[in-house]
Length: 130
Image 1: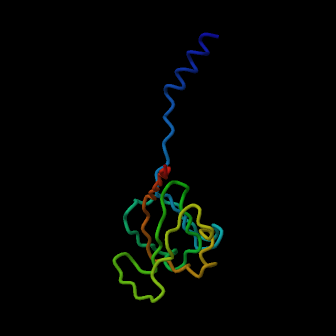
Image 2 (image 1 turned 90 degrees about the horizontal axis):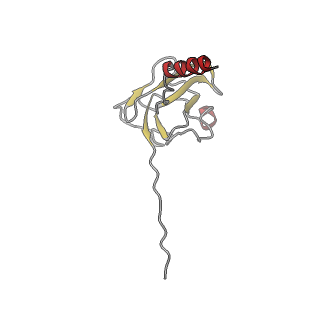
Image 3 (image 1 turned 90 degrees about the vertical axis):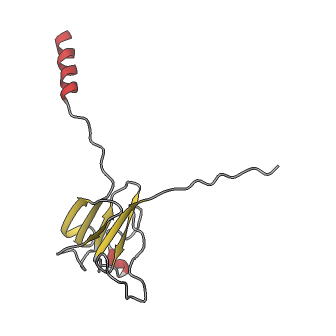
């Protein structure tokens, strides 16, 4: 029995540690509900990324992972000038965004670029009046 315990301990010591998942993971698909051509990549935060074919202008699934980050999709490429009277971003999309698996439901499948960022939370401390 002692040799089994030594073998088990040696096996655990040689096992590689579990890697922590990086923030910035984003699933892009040409179809709604993660259908069509899909790509999952971890993108750098605070960096504008141009979407390339087949996703440029044809992204129906724009689904960030569940970490504390969100992404702004843009209708123009990085460095472009916004000329739309409605604005050139849908707003911040995070894991909890209800239409992340179907941007066509909000008429916003024309994504050309995006920028992801870390979400920060603020805590309000209430003081008790005396």
